[in-house]
Length: 74
Image 1 (cartoon, rainbow, N blue to C red):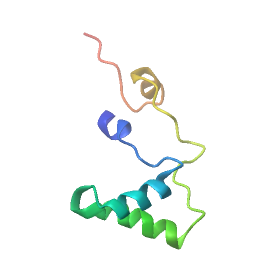
Image 2: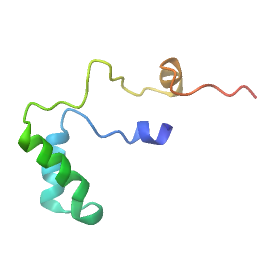
Image 3: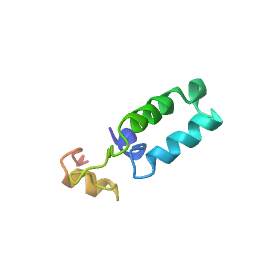
Image 4: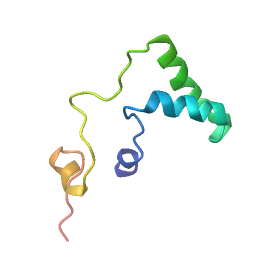
């Protein structure tokens, strides 16, 4: 899903973003999703969700080369 890839939030600063979101309660359901992330980082501070296999989105060709989408030939 291209939208899911563009919205991917598991970056290096997710721990800080989660803490900020929980403090501000600015997202849906008072940042409930971010509360889960914050709790996971509290339990496992060394947790990293971005791996060596992760790839940064550049354009549709970059995700096509990974086999996530296929071009449509009109």
